[in-house]
Length: 113
Length: 118
Image (cartoon, rainbow over all chains, first blue to last red; front, side, top):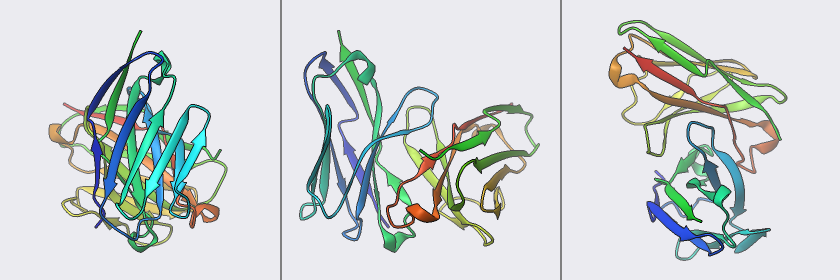
């Protein structure tokens, strides 16, 4: 089955700087890669997603890149703000696995004022 | 976006009792629902996948007799933790996918239920 690895587990950046979180996946059939933000005790919130037919997607300060050949994808947050502090999860899904979404281990992002 | 409601948000029970958690899709028909378990500071671990009207498919290592899942309608799935023990204490989150999202893969999450077994 699918296995998603995520790095780093914790990340601390100065407010205004950029943050990058990287993930790799194992199932070459995976074709949907969402990123979720989760605040303490709350549900995961979808912040951006990318499908296998594109290599990059951007939404304001957030961007995601996908390298299908290498089977890795990354989340980029620019001009970080205090409210970006949270746990971020990458995930992968494929039709061959009943479209179930498998999550990475998570990255705890802290923004230093 | 689509709304998924989960109830109860918090539940405390005695060891040996059973607890039922409900997951409802409020404004769409959820053909597939997923149940996840999350330990403190850890990731979401998929427990099982349920399709309306059929038996749930459990992930390896998840006891189906311990965690009973029912998906009786297109808007409701339930997770029952039977004979709960302290090690079952966790944050349980459901997610749902509608017919229109089958090919896109997008999931909508419930608020989660924090179970504490004394």
